[in-house]
Length: 320
Image 1: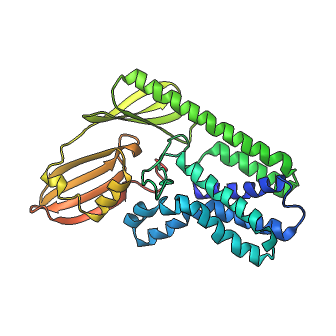
Image 2 (image 1 turned 30 degrees about the vertical axis):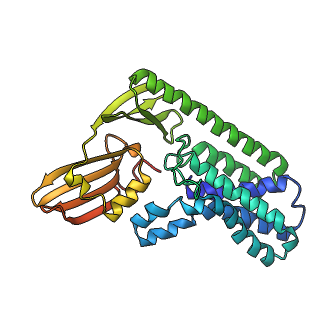
Image 3 (image 1 turned 60 degrees about the vertical axis):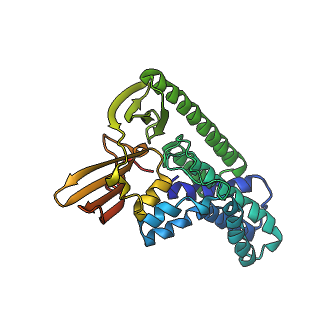
């Protein structure tokens, strides 16, 4: 999910901890717990610092080792131990660790449900897991948790009522979106009647989705509006000839191939060489393939230039 939603969920997790009655009236523990859950809710995304080394490093490391199985247990230790010492609540270290762990796990859990995905099984498996159920920003969940947080902090609302209800509704909402997603995958398959791999990808609108179908010979893309399946684009697969193979060893292409899952590649001849375009069809939007690598080659198939990243403005969809 987006950074704002993760931080907000950190606040409401602190409220949920208050609702258990274990925190009591200890102001030092309450403050430490709030800081711990907020930090824990964002901690796996501290890997965004690698963006300073360029987009290639970011694609290679983002949502990788910092979201892995060992990280689920290391982040709570890194966060809760200094806070327990700083707020003089070392006697409650176990409680701080537990709620920080909940925050970290819930962060990774939510990331697993969107289209970008997460390598949460590392080091056992480097596979990207993306369930394509939630958008990167879910307006309903944000409003729900913002209302609960404001009512609790601003108007003295009862934590024991607000936060179990908020998290119960959250889990029901995610379950409902998962059911909706599974139903729409079947709907697209029934309409298109093709043998292949189907992806149905959410948007901010609860009833507008995109889909990608990969068959042996081509990719098909389109959109779902309520139950209407609208086929829009077809991308034939191209054999990887010498021109395409000349780009496989490029650092940006290797990083892309380690992340992308529905890979489409084409090339065209230019005045002074060739241009090879790698794209991940999962992020198709509005008849364009906005994410991938563009590589320029000279006539001798030597790499002149390459660029990895988004072929769109930051404020343009899709948002992943």
